[in-house]
Length: 342
Image (cartoon, rainbow, N blue to C red; front, side, top):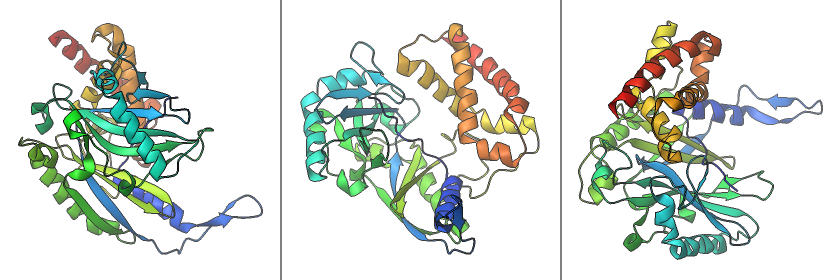
């Protein structure tokens, strides 16, 4: 059973979600939610860990101790792999099995599936970052517990999985590297923008994980996670070199104001997003890069923009029918040039 790692959104999305949660009182007898518009917003403690630039991967075990390996959107095997991760994991199956069994025992998990997510990085998996100069490695960054009915799934807090690693097997843990802490008062979230940006720029200038391995180079950004009313809230702040959109602020609290379709396309159809589409459509599926995959490539780009920038579109009165053809035109031209380079 494949279960995706939850997409990580932006700071502005967490602000909106926490506001809704804080104002929610309960359900009325008529089935409508009761909302307190005057509710005071909470102060939430967040932990920031370094966001690594590689390929999302995971290993899983169900209640019957069956194991499998995952890419972001599908299971992988040695025969149908993602940049060699299944081959790497299968050779270390006993180590992965021991990690999950220990997590299950210490957290009293019996009937649920446990998926340990990490970044498959280093080697030639991604370019332009410090980790590119190191051997391939798997860095654990999250653990998900999946119920048999696939309802009420949840992620374990960092302190429930921070000790798991096997360095001699190239299995590491993101909690072992520099972490950041911030208590964010959601009554005034804008006050924290500069701190978030400063931390992100520090990581982008020199990746703390790469530095720990003796390699100096560019980092991608920081992932932040915190809990409020038993709900997990996560957001990412990427540096300018890795952002999927041409944002005016790295950690915006408000939605971007877009003045035209052309400006939106310029904002959303960036080289980083297009390279990510190449990775997701072709690389992780072991598909040869060619014009035959143009349709799948364009669909991924259009869908990713709709998913990540829906609030921006709504705020600026831009409907998919207004912009999709222009997104596709820019993405198609870039893609054809990319194919011709191969």
